[in-house]
Amino acid sequence: MISRRSLMLATAGVALMPGRALAAEPGPIVKPLPPEYFTVHGTNAEMKWTALSGHVIPNDRFFVRNHTRTPVIDAATWRLRVHGNGVRRPLELTYRDLRALPSCTVETVIECAGNGRSFYTSQQGQAVAGTPWKLGAVGLARWRGVRLSTVLRLAGLRHDAVDVLPVGLDPEYVTGGVNLGRVRRPLPVEKALDDTLIAYEMNGEPLPPDHGFPARLVVPGWIGIASIKWLGELEVATTALDSPWDTQYYRMVGPTYPAEGTLVTTQVTKSAFELAWGATLPLGRQVLTGRSWSPDGRVRRVDVSTDGTTWRRAVPTSSGHGWLQWQVPFHPAAPGQYELRARATDSRGVAQPDVSPLNTQGYLFGAVVRHPVNVVQPSD
Image: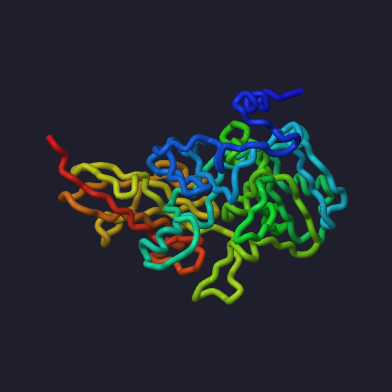
């Protein structure tokens, strides 16, 4: 029997491969990427802060981070395989099996480890490698699915299990002529059992293809690579596991780090104005809005400077769940160039710094960003 989804894809001229991904794919990203919503960086698409609507980010505006391209997978033949010496009862779940398990909903941010990377160069004058994200490689969504702990316990998780290695079903990643295989990255059992979700819905809808359909991990507070999309396999082991995505990539390497680098796990606190970069604003009283977020989803306060010297407390306009929305008045005295700065203080009382320590891959930029705007006299 052909599902309604499969029929729609076939009608669009795309043929499904039995059980896995499409034989012919239109590009690295499936969904439309209108320029008013996104800045495209090759296989990736950065959300524009001017495209925001509501507390959560709509699916059609959520940023996309792909190592290769988005696979479009048939849920009818999809399977999630759980195996390894860290479980007593290896199992294989269908999409229907997964959705039949007890579910929960988590509202949390997913953010690329390189979000803010361009500011190492533009703001700190330091050369780094990687996609030149500003601050739009982040999004808050309402994820529904099954706790990873539920699935691991169904498989008979051993008490001495150490790592879980989730493996995606996107095409194998080839770089420099070397095939590194499918995207995968080990997760400590402690984090897997804590708050990690196997999600199958995003904002009340089945996961869109670009965001992991049929199922993906959601790992709150950790860098985006941990939240493996298009999940197809979970290897559980009683010894440490590794992959190129924790040995070769996603390590902090630089003058203040050890020679082997420091593994990147949790994110850092950030703030962003809901304005275009270099926006033109009319002279006169107005209200600036923005959002701040931290790894534990709690921001204590946000301060804003519009003159580079003095700081004012921003007024929260949301509960702060997932991220804190805020606003602050802005009344420039004259036309000209201004730099807006927002500085969040997390739940521990630690404020965003003025400078982020350099690492060669430009991960975890958490310094206060200087956002330029041009204030002009309104024409009559």
